Image (cartoon, rainbow, N blue to C red; front, side, top):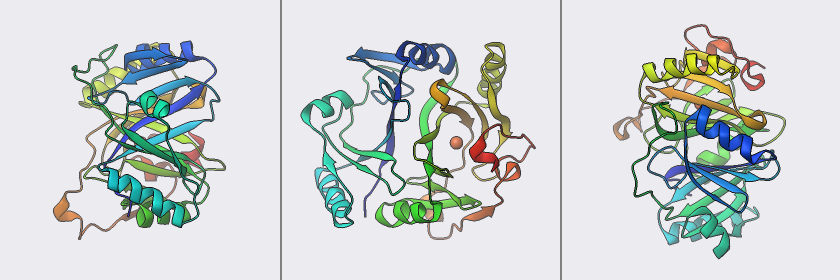
Length: 287
Ligand SMILES: [Fe+2]
């Protein structure tokens, strides 16, 4: 069993690194960490970085998860290889690029590029966003799946993910107490479908809503409240077709609930995503 400790970062290709960097700072509110060889790193919390934009294919997405010991990293590699999945050990240069001690790379059954990292660097400085978006932390990704039932089995049997709830066949998966750190979305192709940051309160969320309207950033869904995690949410357009999300008030599933929690089934469609009646302008939420 691969024990995913936490989600760590996303790496996103872009043909417009300056545009993406400007967006990450002035719209999203992330803090610039460094620029280095066609890569730009951004913080949202105590992690060294949670988003790295690089000069490359906008379809090239990676999601990284932390494992907590060399033995776990080796065991993960062995387990994936036993399943005949291609696993590659990161090079020293690649480790340095990611600010990790060691890592492996593989692709999930849909073809999503996943990195498992050991000893990722924390930042020694307090996080402060470029604008006051109220971001607390990088919290989850929406991950595209070409077969949600197959991929749910992968994440829950090969890895330690547990199903918190389902919307249609799409599972919301937790790896710790947070209701979900991975949300699988049926799609024709792999990739990151959205990137979520938790904000401090509904006031932060609504302030950003009016800010984004003023900046003419297309709102994709919300403000609304998820019936699944109970989080209030706002989805909006990012560079290269990416969707970003702010949310607040996500439900926790505490250790004592682990044995008794039963995933609830919600319908696939707007009502499965919002209790307030917001209608999504997001293909993956509407089909
Ligand atoms: Fe989300």
